[in-house]
Amino acid sequence: MKSTFDVGDVVATTKALRQDGTFPDPNIATGQILVEPGTRGEVINVGLYLQEHIVYAVAFENGRVVGALERELEAAVRETSPSSRAAAATAHATSSAADSSAAVTSGTTDKEEGLS
Image 1 (cartoon, helix red, strand yellow):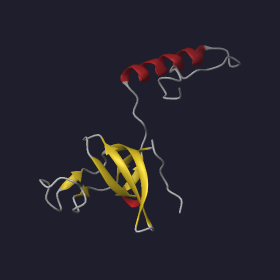
Image 2: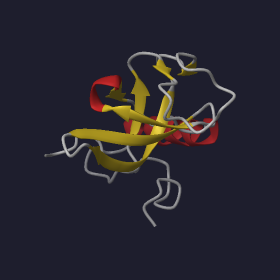
Image 3: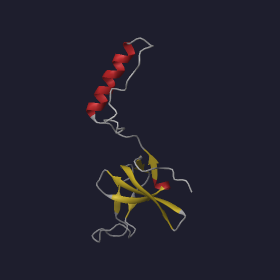
């Protein structure tokens, strides 16, 4: 069984995720919404339920870590910080005016991209 998402992937909910009794907070009633539709989060773990359903533990922007099925998630774009967007825009403007044989950079370092 191959999972669609991996640890570190950014996802968004396709529907409201509700308390089904498995979220560990006794103050949240069954049926209450835990995560609103369209909320973004990062996959922090991938597991199996009953050996046939892939379940993703997702740390959502609202601070909750909730298990979600593949059909409840979709891929989302990782949002960059305003300073990263400004640097990328500056690099793009600079590279547009540069000679076509020149190397083009994204305007971010490997450390900013989380590569080192």
